[in-house]
Length: 513
Length: 107
Image (cartoon, rainbow over all chains, first blue to last red; front, side, top):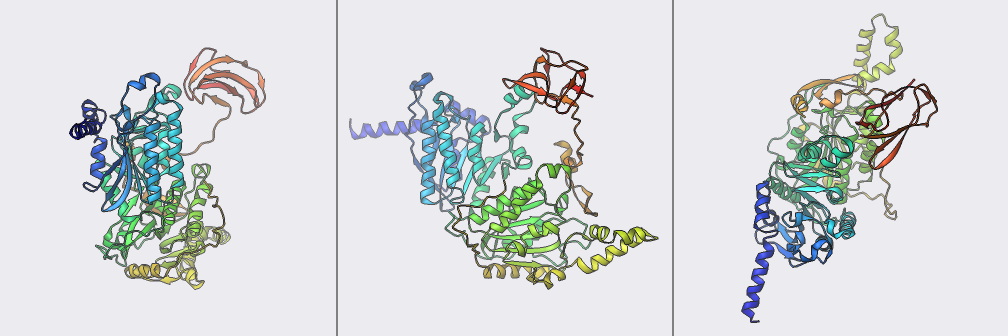
């Protein structure tokens, strides 16, 4: 064979492999409103940065007529590329090839690129679009999933792992994304569930559409399984690029540092309403504190009573955790604790400083909450803040009552600096509740119990609904006005060292789960 | 889902420790917990009644088998959660039952 014919043969092989499952299947994929796997890789990576590996890998299964089936790339594209000039590893399942089903060779390609990401210590992006296990390959596909889960876990906290769900992701397959740090879903395209609508209908008689059971909205607002919601695939790619700009490549490196930039709109001293019962949107406060007012919320539609996300202060990434008075008065509950704890642990794993904004009346009362295990889940928040060794700066804006005061990164849980505004109320509970308990006898014995109650509430408020009692004991380090807060926070982070609990000999702690 | 939408951005009063806050409250928050009636034994899963092993008027102890429900490829023993007298048996052998359908009521 001449060199020329060898090259021609090679060219036509590549051309064929690039077609994935062929023209008809590709058309079908587009008709579903989805990009092809190769288009996705091209759009997510910097132009011409993709280095593909294992394009020529083939499966070796022979049962059920598989020996006669050629599957391009065995249904998955793998390799390395750059996003905003920073290297990443990625895989993209190709639904047009045998439904993106996962067999042994398919899994081996993913495992190889995961190992590559682990040794190069660069972020891993997984694009999931697969019907699930390749049944024809039997237990080999289960082996494949297991090998992937193992790596998702051992690389957790070493490199950031991002999962895009761009098609079905059902059964055991959901657990790879679930083990990663951030999950991105797209309206009408993403579906995730352990058992699908058909099985549920058969077994339980419950009639539910795939969208309602495990669509993009469900997972971002009801289950919290996904962190970012997008209307289109392109929007999700944009979110991934933006998120990566806040993150380091691995746990040993620092996040990229940007030029420090003032907020678009500084906060004024009347950022929070006069009446302490009135709601406001805490994201306005966050945007008034951080560089460029650029704040990327994580889990925006889930457990909205707490806000978490990434921003920069003086050019450096910070993870922000804030009570949201606009929603359920900013109470802590089961879901809010889970959401915040997971975020805090991510930040701590990757050396990202934590900025906490406090305005919460406490924990949500109710049988539902108690039975849902608010004790166990609430403990995660305490655990993750206490465990975190990164610089932790806390701003107490208004209410910081009782157990919720302790939980929201108080001095007592190892905050590097606690800053409070003159509007702060650091107390064991709100004035109304405290007066009703402490002065119960006086109120009951009074000729005018209502007037007496109000008098006692006012007394309590005067004495305790302020930051000065806590500051007098050193529980608050710095008192300042809202408009000076940004500069003080920047200094506080600058002077905060990384903590060392002195227990690095332990294997790991036992976080309440 | 629709109802949740309507309530969005609407501020309501919420009492936490005797302080009334104005804030958004999701529709799901209005569901109130009610104690379960242990004497009403309902199907926890849809399936088929294989056998009824008790009779109306019988006295049963906690844990006594009342009937067998075939579901999820298993014969599930439905037992008395508390002691009592069988007041009503609402199903018979061979009958297909829906989830949450009343099977037996104790007195």
